[in-house]
Each structure stands twice: as C-alpha cells, then as structure tokens.
Image 1 (cartoon, helix red, strand yellow):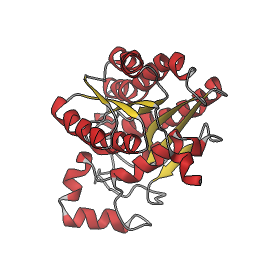
Image 2 (image 1 turned 180 degrees about the horizontal axis):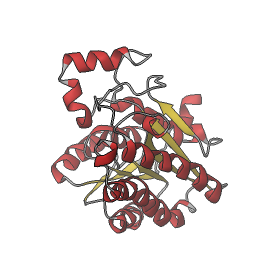
Image 3 (image 1 turned 30 degrees about the vertical axis):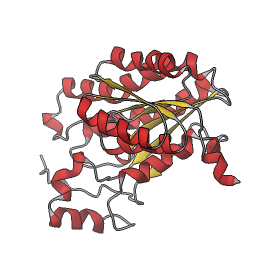
Length: 263
C-alpha cells in the first residue's frame, strides 16, 4: 500500500519550536504516523499540552523547555533524544523568525540575531544530530522550515527574508554534504494561521486582503505544513533531498503589505 510509505513507526524525532503552531502540529502529525517525539520550546505549559496529544496518538513525548536561540542549547537536543528514545531518525528545525522593520531600522545586530536564530541554531542541531542520524534504518532525515519570504521581495522583511533565504540554501548545501545517508529538505512556508498572524487573523479587512492576494484564497493551517513535513521525513520521500517544497498557497509576491513608506 502506498500509504505505508508515509508511516514512520518506531522512529524518533526532534521538533523545535513545538509548543504551538507549525511545530505543535508537526509533532502531533509525526506521532500519529508512528514516531516518538522530543518537543522543545520556551514554554513548558504549551509543551505539556502538545505532549498530551502525542500520548493520545499512542507515542512517547519528551518535553524540553529551553531557550533555543542559544545554538548550544539547540545542539544538546540531539543527544537528549537519542538517550531518551535509543535512536534519532528525524530532525525538524522549525524554530525561527525575526520582527519586520524598515531598512534603516534594521541594525547589524538585528540582522545578526536573525541569522543566529534561523540558521545557526538549525546548523547546531543538525550537526549534533548527524552521528545519530547515520545509524538510522534507511537513513536519517532533516526538514528545515524556511519561508516564502526567502525568495520573494517585500518591504520590511530584510532580516527575516535574508535569514530564511540562507536557511533554504543551507538546506541544499547540507543535502550534498550529507548524501547519500542523510536526506535534508526544506519547506518554504507562506502565511499560516499561527500566533505570528494573530493581528491579521482578528482584523477582517487585513485577512480578506491577504486571502485575496493568495491564489488559493485562504490562509494556511499549521496542519498543511505538518503534512508536508511528514512527507519529507518519511519513506515516501526516500528519493528526495536538497529540495525546498513550497507550501504557500501559490503566492509569487508578498500577500501582506506592511505599509512602509518610500525613503
């Protein structure tokens, strides 16, 4: 059955930024497909709620509250997962982000923090995970959560878009470095209904405009991205590496205008 190729029974995964939104949906999806999951983010209460959903799917969750803006903390998750589950097969680098700002308000420090938070932490965890992933049955898998803004141009996204573009190309480069035994892929995410879009989702005019600018005429759901993660992490994508899959509703231009004026 082709559906069997989407099963990851008995495997173990790490998902960062897993307390809510895309990370939480991904952790639950991987558990429903058969994996045990280490879930990490800052807030224990949120992680405990996700852990309960993982348990309801019949799998184990290991909760690690941590400030993952520190690359050393991110790297440590690999050994914790391997010790807890006896193996590590899948890494999902979901943590990231950067506040929008006008060009002259984007300081070098702000840019540096964006690259550390989106790229350096992903590399730290992936690098630490590789010795474990090399032992995985059928090879290990890494999935990096990038953004449509890594390929689109829009005002206010200088730090965020640059960092996500770097993560997308990191994905391609790491895939070559780690082939053939570890697959590395990414997802370029569009506008998804998470806490980052709370202001938009509660403003009917803003939401309507964003939907109008999206070919599929809706904002994405975290489960839309989680399904793509499961595909890339599972044997269904056994012949896929170095790819950045678009899960963005079809946009070819930013669908949210931040309203920044000309200089």
